[in-house]
Image (cartoon, rainbow, N blue to C red):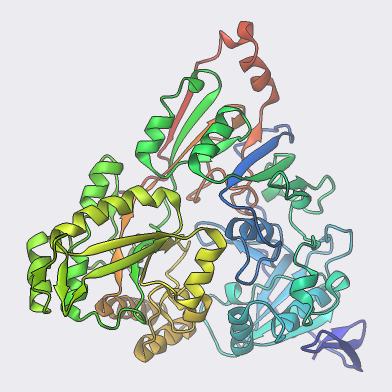
Length: 598
């Protein structure tokens, strides 16, 4: 039941509106909060010029501007979503701060959160952000035409209602009491004045249409021929005077260029067509930084994020590998020599993950996962009936070779997988490698068309979230990489999500991890810890390079830690002038251990 200008507006599942008379009244004695509204993550940055074109790279050009559906480009999706603000955001130490909301209050039922929308909030086309936009968004997601079935199903199952009280006030009510209530009621609006309705033509109509947004940047140029998409900072952005954001989002333009491989990216960087390259591979990083260009304006950064480790490793598809017995799964786990990868590629600076949730303090459990052991693996394979080997040394049973085909998406993972492939052959296991790029990789994850995948998740910034990676609902979403469908695990995850008691949730978190690890479909990989990049020195970073634990100093748009770098035009001019350049150090090398944890 929704009030809008003393009228009830109901947006049906087709997107059409009907109007009925209805009034709403806020509960009395609500305790309103604005969270960490007055805290700036960028106070250490002095007044800097807001200029420059920052150019980053992608390995493929997007097929759509839509952020939902199988064709969505993962990196473009993040860029667009970071500029399409929700009600609130969370910093890296758990604090909540306002985005489109100015205040919020929790209802006595512990299922409802009331939000006051900032009256200054505007869409990029100048329209005011209103309560109606949040209601329209909720109803649109429930439409059968919404391009993300998982998001639609989640909304239907978990959000009971959204109410409007006036132009700037809404409430969101969950169907059940739940932990992380602010996070779960944190709606992102849709511009109802622009989209109008979600119908069968929605995907086709908005495939390449720039939808109004609320964040600091908006897409201003798309060149399919030249392979780039540019985001321009809004000159009169409604939130630019907020203390938290005053020194953020300094680049005038952020441009993403599609380049086919790492060598082409490196050549473009050397010609100063790119501002930065992020390098995961330590050997490649060391090779790149020996280039003479670093005496002519190049800089290097090694940054420790301080966040929990990414949940990265080899996920075996349980639907495709039902033939694997317990002994076979354990033997396969003993066949992956991550220590050799660590020595060969990371100069022994990496660490083997202790589990999928490594670094979450009391929430984590640490198991003794199988290490590479040639003798143990062979013993387990023989006990499972794979007693003979073919001419290549691969184990055979019933004329079938012991083979595991691993799909991967990142070109830089190839060297790591190549070492694992060579080492696994010692135990009689044949590893086949298949690289699948970008959007097709995500499509394959959703359909389950793979035997195993080498992939992972960026760390969550608070306590572990299990719903995506181990709940059966994540299978259709393509996030349950092992495609586990276990009723007991589903039940525990549902209980964990709904539980309010800290101690009960903690025990459930441990039980969930133990159950998932017992199933044996995940083989933990390595955590390098360091984020490494090369950049042109006229792109400057604060000290420390990023506020509190943040994934990277080079994030472009994230409302908590994005856009803190800035362009120094004077330094670029000086680097190009032999007379001025003589007084500047030939290279800049930053090693930032501010957030280091052992």
